[in-house]
Length: 125
Length: 164
Length: 86
Image (cartoon, rainbow over all chains, first blue to last red; front, side, top):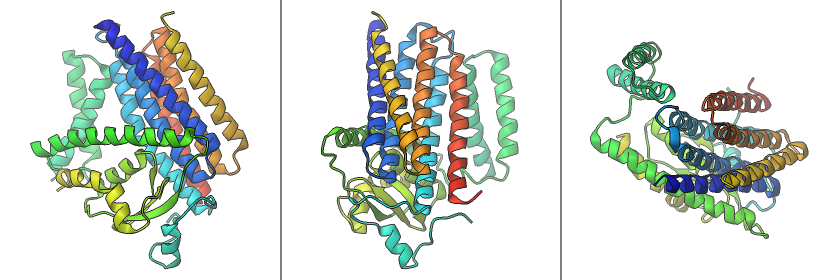
């Protein structure tokens, strides 16, 4: 039973590190800022969550005396709450700076609607 | 109205206290209850953060079901993005599409936007009334209807139950 | 032999940090650098968790919580600044 927990935890940790590595490779390879934000911040969210779950499972020996699980749970909830907010703010800043989209982009409904005066330019009040 | 607000924020702060202290001593739990009660009364006296939540058993069941659906979507989308990043030709097809939501509550819209942002491949840039502008790494359909069906519907029908 | 999985994952995390650093140095715009910084921060949070596990001290995780909070604040403030709202 205990060895099973440890092996499951190690598998989770490996999957998490691999996901983080994928995020970094995406950060290097993607053509423009928007796609880099996409792959760079979101794959790393899942990677961090999986790694923390794995590490929490691997510390099964002293779950009762020492507070491992609670701290890892707080970290996971914290990352789930803050990561979309910070990456969304970054993406809006990139759009407000008018950094051009890559040549692969097919459609930009937001620019069309800004030109048609349906929405305002994203900037601060 | 106000009681519900204070109660929900009390629960959130108390769960955080219990997770961080990790002890079931009488003194520690009582101290936690006192601090959480004081904080939730002081901080949430005028906030409207949890006003629109439904506190029924059905909403709780849908909350857990939502978490499960969200996790499945997260893993599926991650596998998809991993495949795109690692394949040598990098088959991406990005674009910004417009979707529409029928949710009215602010909190539900916040959760919807954050869920869309957390699933890799889709990313909320701007919200304007009912319209949301989403950066999509692989555009399947450019019109509003198709994009709404592909991105928003699966989360929306669960959130409608939780936030009346 | 017991810890070989942990060493493999530490190697992967180091490679992640290196890739983030390359993007941080190279990145054409400010937003690229901030994204690289954010990704490196999440990686270091995981690294702190691994170190806490290896040295068997749960108290190190508190450092990770505070570090994550400060980094979130930093990213949001820098984004607001380059957007012109600060």
